[in-house]
Amino acid sequence: GQQLNQSPQSMFIQEGEDVSMNCTSSSIFNTWLWYKQDPGEGPVLLIALYKAGELTSNGRLTAQFGTTRKDSFLNISASIPSDVGIYFCAGQLPYNGDMRFGAGTRLTVKP
Amino acid sequence: NAGVTQTPKFQVLKTGQSMTLQCAQDMNHNSMYWYRQDPGMGLRLIYYSASEGTTDKGEVPNGYNVSRLNKREFSLRLESAAPSQTSVYFCATPIAGGNIIADTQYFGPGTRLTVL
Image (tube, rainbow over all chains, first blue to last red):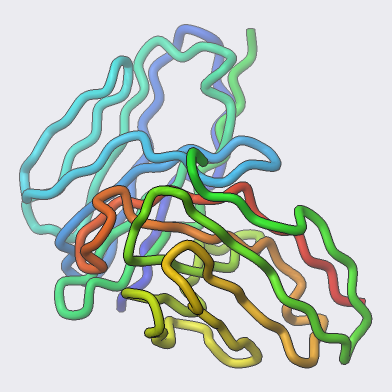
C-alpha cells in the first residue's frame, strides 16, 4: 500500500516532443519529489511539491501534486538529448516521514 | 551530489566477507540516510540517522549495521556479505539540513557493490 507505481517504465521519443510520466499510490503522501539520475550518478532533485494541488515549474519541467495526495505527474516540454536519463518520483509518508521511491522511468531522446 | 561523498565507488566481495561503506557530508546537516537501489525497484531506505550518535532502522535494515560517530560521517557496514546485497548504495542528506521529516535530499554518487 505504501509503494509507488511509476509509469511508464520507459519512453523513446524524438527530440522536441513533450513527455509525461506519473506516479500513483494507494497511500497518502505529504511531499512529492521528482529526481533525475544519470548513469553512474546519484539522483538529483528536479522539483519538490509540498501541498495538494500544487503545480510547480522548473524550466521545461512541470510537476503537480495530485489533489488526493496519492499521485503526481511530471511533464517535460520540448525534449532535448540531455533529458536522457532515469526519472524517479518519491513521496514522503505523513506518519513517520519515511520516503518511498518509484521504480523509475527511463527516457531516451532521439536526435 | 554537491557536498556528499562516498567511498569506494566500486567494490567486489566474496560471500561472507565484511566491508564498510563510507559517507561524508560537508553541509553540517544533522540527518543522513543510507539507501540501496536495485534494478526495477525504487530506492529503499536501509538506515537513517537524525543526529550525531543516533541511528534508526529503515525499510530494509537486515544484514547491515551503521555508525554515526560524528556529524559529518555516516558509515554502513556489511558484516557478512551475501549475494542478495549486490546493489548500488546511496548516501543522502536533506537539503533542509536538520529536519528528518522534511525534505528533499542530496544524494552521493553511489557505491556499486557486487557480492559473488
